[in-house]
Length: 280
Image 1 (tube, rainbow, N blue to C red):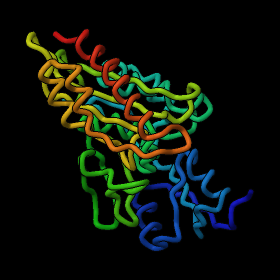
Image 2: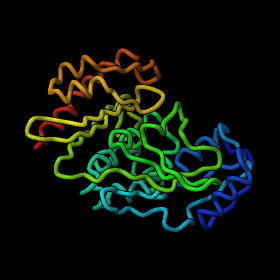
Image 3: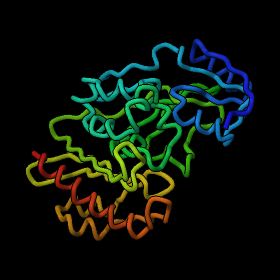
Image 4: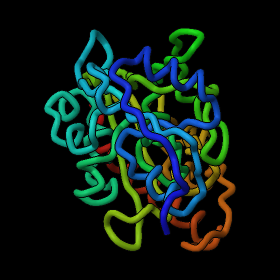
């Protein structure tokens, strides 16, 4: 299939992109990596009058440690993030997840901010951001603002982005010597969307784990925190954590809800082992 006709423009600055969004409202779409947008255009699930290419905007693709945070620009390519020394050292959960995102061709073009904005509930990065307690930098006609990951993902492909707003960067707490992370997913083939996946973070000490955050993907309309299981795992009881999994997955083309619930428990045991083996 081919997309419906549309106009194209390339924004040179953030201000220009926001101005164009404000002017054209629902008739405009942003083009970054295009790995999701082009597919929806071709299937005519999306039919904007104007495509605003933001790839020419400077300073939106950086990766840097700034104080206690790692900041990743919205236009940073997945491959750039995957091979970043800053990410490997200061954001190990992101480093663990990157090789699971699509295939090399996808990672070469897809962008970090695009994945967060698209908010696919089976995608790795939204769950990682939720597990890390990150925040999203947003720009729009009313100025700039920040939204915590816990408040950003609202529903199926729905986020806290207001009309005519765009993501400029994502910020996550930089890892320190107490940081513990774990990641696992089950997919039919490497690079496919996960049937079920789990991203986790915690703080380790001599007694065990604290501040446990378990973010599942592929089990709901958004990435989902399993808060009852978090509490049980922080108490050191993996069996209790598995029994306490407060998830309500739906049947889909990949697996039944019952299968997904079982696999969620399997992944919890694997990720708990990662967290506990690394604890201080």
